[in-house]
Length: 415
Image (cartoon, rainbow, N blue to C red; front, side, top):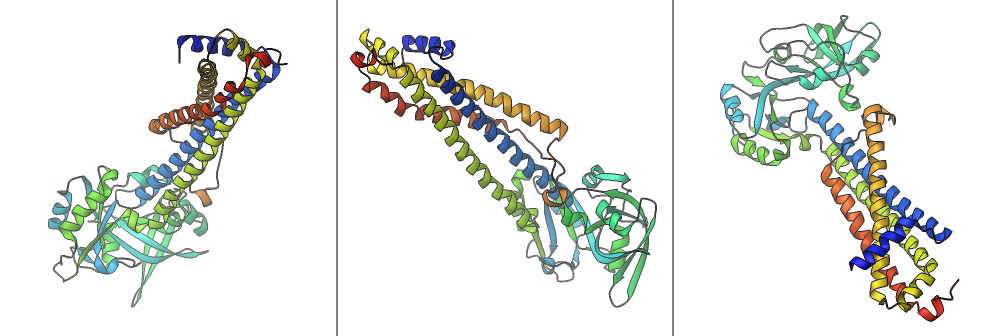
């Protein structure tokens, strides 16, 4: 493409299609089509990435990245005991990429007030457990300093649970545990949390590890397992393999076998669902690129047909078909570039509006979040911008060949 064709294309583009109403309209439609298509792609990707990140963070906050359990506990609601002594803790902590290791116990029971009762899984957490997630989602009260050495008599429950049981912070609630005999414990509601992950909020409460360990009646070093949190979650599979090599298929002092699983294995349905959203993004990208290309190609054809007289004059003055074709390709590139710029401005305006105002809301009972989350990934932005430019530019090559069929003798008289 010569400087001459680029210069003429810029002059024509700067005129805004002043030679005809159809040309102005075609230029506007083509630019709008590219802009809207690009904006839809950018916003859609931002929403999907934001939704995936939001839900994944909540699931990761509730559970450990990796759990070391008794082999008998896999797939079971009730955990079997396994020895998690200082030796096991040290070996797990020494694995590369492990940020923290904490013992845990869980006990199934029933919460009861004068008005209501419901089944519940109460997890005992100690001082080694990372309580940042629940603390950050507290809507009332506080997260007590739970330990494995003393009973606190306090309980942290979800907002959904508090509403159903009709209790508030500071009030008393009883928990019953059924085995050979019924055992009861009195708790004071210390905090109420809300994450909007319905399956978790309705089923999990938290108290100190000491209380749950005593209720289970296990020996001093026996626990439900160990929860491992990682420094870099992207290295989950690699670290899981290290944990497997360290403890799996080995026996504790009671002859029980260690096993381990990642959070993706534990909550495979949620992660598979999040993965399926990638397919939605691909479909949207294909459809919007087709829309952008179609409008740009249609606009270029209209512009070429309306400027038939101009094309004839150019050829009569000695311009070759290739030069005229390159001229209109340059014109089309200018349309695409303007469309991409406007599309980015529109997309980021919508993304920032949603991010800071949450104007588009969702039903948290269904979608796990109260407002549509957005997340900008600059690699995705660059890829979409570049992909739109390249594919649209390539699509313009075919309609540009129309100029080859225009002859000076007929086109100069063309009206």
